[in-house]
Image (cartoon, rainbow, N blue to C red):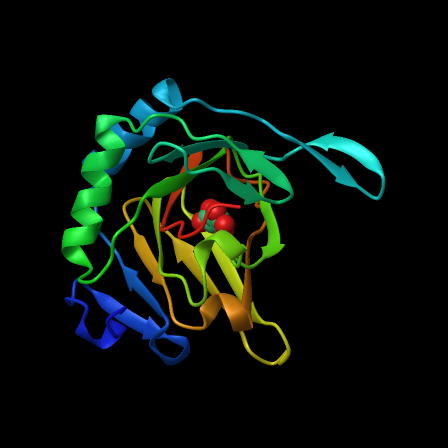
Length: 206
Ligand SMILES: O=C(O)CCC(=O)C(=O)O
């Protein structure tokens, strides 16, 4: 049973959207975030997948990597991801998050590598069936600060823009994925890389 976000420890905590999104700035220090960014750029198993837009094939505007417990495959944006074996550095981060956010456990992490502000991620919800209803997702940002936009699926007056700085952890839970979409928009003036790690709990095999 997932705990209410009201019980999360206060580390510069702000709550939005009925307590379903919590922002913990400085979860990692600037130095740690930068060390992890450099380590992952070099050592993660990055892939650039093909996507089809209006019938034409394109390379996805970012790189991705998927680490998970053995056998946990995942379908994401119509792609089948085969897990890499956990890196020790990723397991350590996962355990730090699980200890900071009571009641959470994660068995996988999706990494997104935005080479600069041209790379982006379009509007979507993390509502894949492998995550079950009301998933809790912990999203850690490293590198360049980027906008993270949210919009309500049915009420266009409800929208929110956050800026995710290096070392910030966002916890998304409750009905957030059911009711809201999120995106990382292009910000062409940004020349530095960013990596985002979304820790997830995959609950079913498909
Ligand atoms: O890069 C981010 O902060 C968002 C990543 C994301 O939305 C996802 O992995 O589903």
